[in-house]
Length: 341
Picture 1 (cartoon, rainbow, N blue to C red):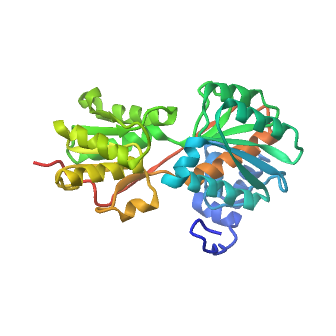
Picture 2 (cartoon, rainbow, N blue to C red; picture 1 turned 30 degrees about the horizontal axis):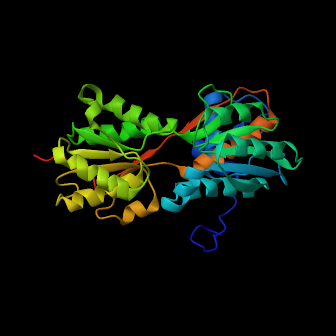
């Protein structure tokens, strides 16, 4: 079933020739890359694997019939209710599990002790292939996950010590891409609206800072206490008291929605008076007035890639951990324009 409750349409079966055509190689090369039998240049092998994941091709797996435990943080599940980011990541995991004949069980966890109990549960069940930790990057949690007997992969997070493999969007380049786009439209004073706390979000701040270059001004960082549109509205409304910016880059769509309300309350037009961009790419952004320009995160691909990393780790537990960051794309709608004259 799809997230909207409707029955999903069954897509035609993906073939090796489909992947070969997309990559411009022979089916024999695709077969060697996916089976890991025979040499294929590393970059080409990664590209073939990425296309296979994108097309949902059933990669070779010996994990059919096994379960994956997914531990999600409390904030991630709150985000599930607010912005649906978590929903799309979970759907990517479920879709990939269906292709591989696996099952996923989701558990909400709070703090290292609950994660430790879940890790113990995974170790004691033969049919559990491993664990995925969604938006869980507390140092103590990472220490316990690294010590676990069953393999653990991080979803939408990473291990700064590179002990655990992880899959996440490339947050730094996503923010840099948005900032560069706004700068190309003439904006030099770009307010960065964010909610601090997580390493992945801090990388969005780094990307904004990278692209601002000599125009970087710490006073342009505007922090919201939580990922709530109403709090973002209050924060931006206060910041309008000294309107020294021509554009806003929000580190999440929920914050951008709050900025819309603050600008409307001040009688300012988007994008004539202030341009707005965001990083997420949630479906409801298209319904905003004007539709929100954004950097779209490949949310389902993040979930699918994490599961494939877990299967790779099971197959070769001694291989080096990998940090996979997925590229994000610019989607222009109606909220970004040239700097006001």
